[in-house]
Amino acid sequence: MRFKTARFSHFRNIDYCELNLDQRDHFMFGVNGQGKSNCLEGIGFISALRSFRTQITKPLFQKGYQEFVLLYELEHENLGHIEVEIKLSGNQKLLFIDGDQVKRMSDFIGLFPVVPLHSGDLMILRGAPSERRRFFDLTLASVDTEFFRALRLYSKSLIERNRLLKLKSESSALAAFEKDLARYAFVLTNKRTAMIDRMNEILTTIYGSFSEHSETPRLKYEPNVLVEDSSAYEQIFRENRQRDQLIGSTQKGPHRDDYSLSLSVGGAKEYASDGQQRGLCVALRLAQAKYFEELLNIKPVLLIDDILGELDPKRTESFWAACPKDLQIIASGTEYPKGIHERNWAIWDVANGVFQLADSI
Image (cartoon, rainbow, N blue to C red):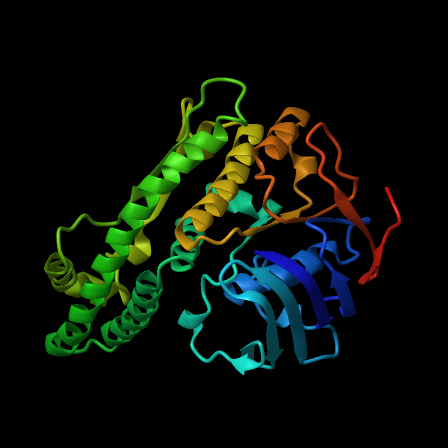
């Protein structure tokens, strides 16, 4: 997959811009606060109809506006030359492919894989379990519609069970929701287990190019409870009703699962150096890109948002060496990209939300 053009209207600090992205690799250059990251954020919106920088919608609208429009032209392995339009107006989200409205999210997820690499990725490693669940759930939902559906329905059933718990409802009312909750929970657990095995294999291969020593990473899925079938989940929910009613929320289930990343020194969150942690997060994103390509048979686009200044020179060189040469890359930074693995960049000068294609570096 490759972007041909991207147009933004009233998105963040961008009043209007039209980017010709026909060349494979593009670099957004400028000092901080000019709109480089906003541009990458707008491009990345096509992947899951959400920002990779924030879960809050309000900051995405240009000041004084209640609507923004994102329009893309792409060359796609399966769909050919295609146009995608995304419009957010207040709380309403509209999506069109070649002029036809897409009404179901499940029909869209996974069609346009984009992998962002940005400073916030450190929270996957350093943050709360919810950060890791979000990363891996978005990864899996992008390639598996059954998982996406189960995750959505599990979340709805969980909200309803928690509501009934707070109301001190009778056991019969809770049992009705627990049956569905257990079925969806078992799907989530099974699919997370299968996904993590393959992701671990890919991560091990990629991280080897970032490491100066033998530091084989290990990615592990840590379910909140271990079960053999959905009826075992039902039993867990039933046995914990009284405790859950006292607390007012469901304490057991896949919504409390976690993942761990470790190196030879021990848990990466606790024992890895800052450089090792950053290298591991970058390798995890590249592993995500490889996983998308394998499962979707679509080459994802890499968005590299001003992260290379956070890596030491060796890891920066290792990063460019590990980047697949056949993927489109759209990057940003306050310094021009350089090194022995330098690509043929089209350079864009960015100032105050305005993008100008430079003649040369």
